[in-house]
Image (cartoon, rainbow, N blue to C red; front, side, top):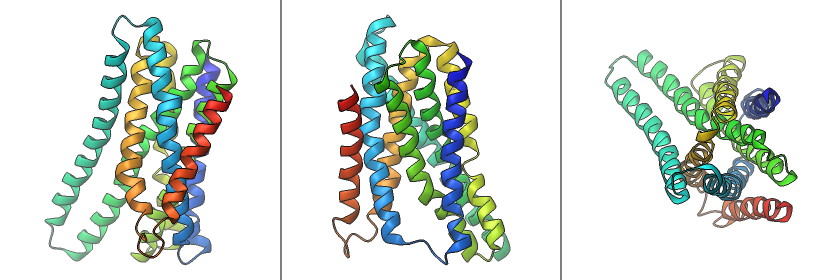
Length: 267
C-alpha cells in the first residue's frame, strides 16, 4: 500500500515543480503575460470546481454509503464544510498577522512584513491543495484501481499544478519589485509550495491507514478546493474583465468542461 503514498509524493512534487516554473518567470521576464495568467487561472478554477464533485464529493458519497454507519449526506456535508472552514481559518490567520504587521511604524519593518505576509498567505493556501492531491491518490488503495479513479487523481494534481504556476509568479514578481534579486525572488517563490509534498504525504497516509476517514477526507479536499477556486482564483482571473469581459470566463468554462468530459467519459 505504501506505493500509493509514493504516488502522492510524486504528484505533489510535480505541483511544487510547476510553482517553481511560475516563480522562474521572474528570471526570464520582467513581468508575466497577464492575459495568459488570467486564462490559466480561469482554466484551473474550472478544473478544480469540476474535480471537487466528480473526483472528490461523488466518491466520498459512494464510499460513505458503502462503509460508513453515518448517513452519506452528513459525511459529505460535514467534510465539505470543514474543508472550507479550514481554508477560511487560514485566511483569518493571515489577515490577523497582516494587521499586526501594519501597526509597525518602521518602513523597513513594513517592507519585511509585507514580504512575509505574501509568502505566508500563498503557503497556507498550498496546504489543503497538497492534502487534496494526497487524499485523491491515497484513496486508490481501497481497491479503487480503475482507470477513471486514477485519472481523477491525476486531473486533480494537474488542476492544482496549473493554478500553482501563477501563484509562483504572484510571489516572485512582487518580491522582485520590492528590490530582491532575481535569484532570491525565485527561491522564495518556489519555497511557498514546499508544504504541498508534505501535506500530500500526510493526506495519503491518513486515508491509507485510517480507512474510516476516507469519505470525510475526500469531502474535506472538495470544500478546500471550492473555496480556493471561488474566493481566490476566479476574482483574480477577472481583474481585466472590462477590457476582456469573457476571456477568463471562457477559461473557467473550458476547464470545467475538460474535467467533466474526462470524468464522465472514463466513468
